[in-house]
Image 1 (cartoon, rainbow, N blue to C red):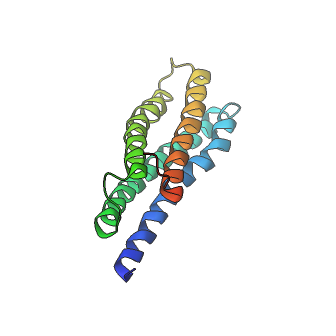
Image 2 (image 1 turned 60 degrees about the horizontal axis):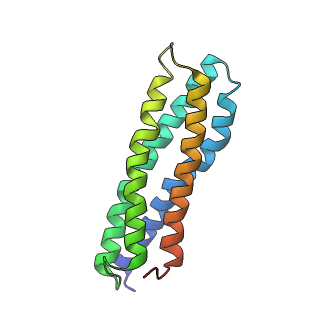
Length: 146
């Protein structure tokens, strides 16, 4: 394994950590949203916004470095675990775009029901974390699915 491949692999793993880690931190924050006053709630929402932005950018690095690893390595685009990872990734990218940003924006609208928005954020956080863990399992276990 040459040094460039190892470096790209390191970047890939690091970006995977940056794609998953913020959502683990958001779980206790979303619980605190339920009882927070409006000023603290705004701070928590800003943490959510920043975390989603970080995850999006880390995801771009993750995809780019993954493509380079496939190109440089012995895996092909038709390998079952790569196809499965890509399928889950496409679904999670669509989900990420629809689940968080529109909900976070609604927190600033006074007529919105904050309890429903918090429930949506809680559900979205858990679901997205589960999707990320599936992708992580595919990349680490490399199961032969077909």
